Length: 180
Ligand code: HEC
Image (cartoon, rainbow, N blue to C red; front, top):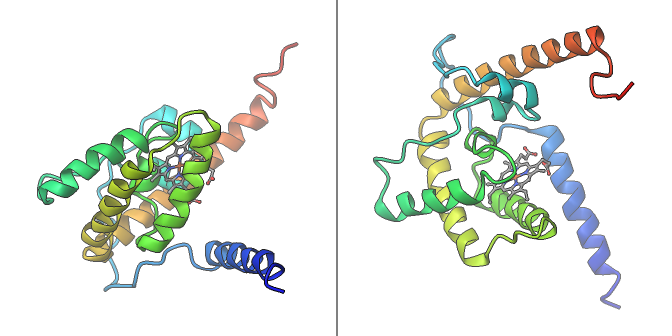
């Protein structure tokens, strides 16, 4: 009698996650409004602007961990090595996620991808990455919410204009890769 509950639970979990994605992209509690133009984010290099899939791809691709405890500085090294294999580190550095459970869910999907790529992400290292992401999200995203929100806002604007540029380019040269 128990068995049918499992697929039902999976559907609920997947549905819940999808709803979360659609409904609230920035699960960061609102702080005082950020003064406009306060996000001095360096511009991403051209190749990254052309290839970006998420606005987060356009942000900084490193974290200044010099003030972090030694344990998390070590965790950062593991994170930087494992999580920049398929996309730049920017994708997670600037992602809106702050909750450990959410990171766990996400990392499970990254592990699956890495597994199919034939380069598995070892469980032990994943734990170090999770510990780092939890700490870093708290320090950099939650404790400095107005700053992080300003950066997010700026990156979203840049992403929109990068997409516009790409659309224009496509209209000029619709199928650049098609052999003729
Ligand atoms: C095997 C390749 C691979 C590795 C290794 C990998 N990723 Fe990804 N990641 C992807 C792909 C492909 C996407 C885009 C598709 C998607 O969202 O599933 C992605 C998307 C993401 C996103 C954006 C998700 C969203 O919907 O906003 C985040 C955040 C992320 N990865 C974090 C990480 C972290 C943290 C690590 C290190 C544990 C990691 N990734 C390692 C392939 C990888």
